[in-house]
Length: 413
Image (cartoon, rainbow, N blue to C red; front, side):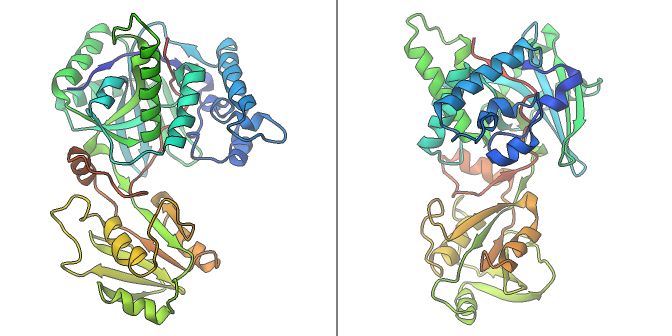
């Protein structure tokens, strides 16, 4: 079972929460962050290169130093304040009429090391190193990771009771997504939450934040190695996460756009597709894939339905059954010669939140030649892959809405 604990969040006063809260560091580029950031925005801490004119490279030592200065300054000015006691928190997000309720808590780095915190993606060392520097220099988890766990009735009832009260924070962001936040500060409920996780929840599943999770575990290991009196209970052994029951989460599609058809003409390309798919021209109106193994393709102003033929995939293989695997094997690799999705410059990826209109826009602009839309991966597939120790292909899952940064921060002291 997993080990969790409450923590004393460092967070903004209610009256300025919308001024402090910001999108995650990796959602905006530096120019977008500078344009969005007001005086109190957490972006001055998560993307401090925006404080320099001209903007410095984000890995410049002066940028890291400014991040530390700004974090201290925000606390000095009272824009971020630490709660008086260790609490659990409930964070609810609403998008298009659907609400998901997460428990904000601290998970233990040992659970990551032993595989109780399960991942479904590979991490890149350079990205881990970058996040590790941020955790180390701030001695804090500035932004949370996003976990899922299998539904638990008792925990659900606790969350529902907390969410029935007036929220501490309640606002709508620039995308129209709602954010609400409650504090669970009574000792009896705190103890019960801890007990339920440690006796009834056997695993966490990393939904979003694989690099931040790995970085937090590495910082914990560093601090452990330098402490001869280490016990395992120190605050540095824990890192901040928002944990949602699996049934409340929805994975959006993660689509592909490609610059060319390789050496093929349009007619040759369609003929090659016909060897593995039933290809139907759907006309000029946007076509959304509506079931597993059905794909949408946009080429020369027209949408196509691609239905994978039987025998071209293995429904008994948790990776082979994925539509990203089918598309990669039968189209991107076999026909277009794209072998490595991580490094090939001919391909790019578009999150489902942008809609299929973004696919046609990029093709119609001449930037790309062809686009593919995929039926979304399910939470059941993600959990099956993580439970069997498998790894998904790159750019498979897109979770939305993203966790808002600046609502809570965890100090490693």
